[in-house]
Amino acid sequence: MIEMLVNSLMMGIVVGLRALVARFVGAGERQNAMEVARQAYVLAAVYAAVIATTGILFSTSIVKLMEPGPMSSPQERPTCASSLSDRQRWPSGS
Image 1 (cartoon, rainbow, N blue to C red):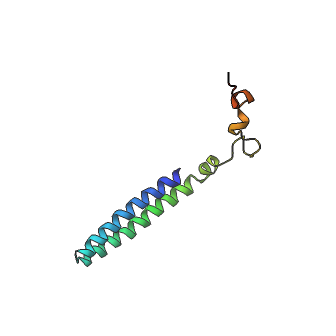
Image 2: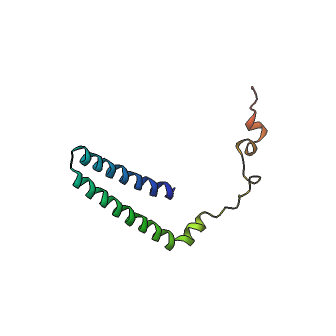
Image 3: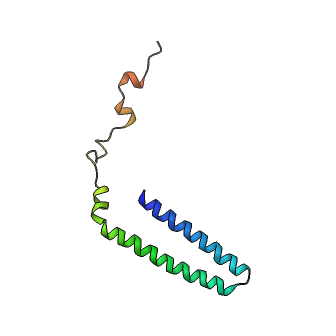
């Protein structure tokens, strides 16, 4: 879930920056396009540093969140069919 949020945020930023670069290139403003591209690289480096630092600082907590719960094996996990009694699974016509 957190992974999707981090990726979505970065993808949104990249899409916006690519649009700015394309707009400047299309308008013939090559210098502005190069400036936006430079800023995009700096922003990506800062974003990567923040995400990496957060990952390093909270690595223990993140690993604990990913530990398997008490029902970790497939044999212990209930399925829809096995959790219902026969009466609930096959209702009678009456």
